[in-house]
Length: 136
Image: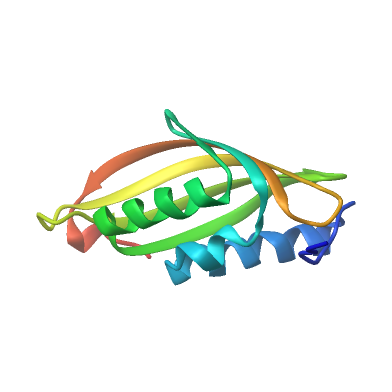
């Protein structure tokens, strides 16, 4: 059985670890690497898209990072309990036309007993920004 440490129930320290691990993985822009943090039957809501299972996660992230260039993400722990973590985040990227964006959002995560994320619900807003206004 796959395990992804730290395991729930979370403490402040282990919740912060999970958030940093997620930030590092997503900033790698490696869909396969990112997908390994999720259960094989993971359920996502990402904006208005629904993603189910690791294969769909890989396809979703591959398409995302083909459109969102020079992607850089920062996550912050918002709250946690036994097997759940809430984060706020922001990330910046530019499109193929050179327009920069900053995306703001919140995610709610639910983990299984092996430390794999089984549910991820993300609410995200994009804001067009000038390149000189980048923070990340």
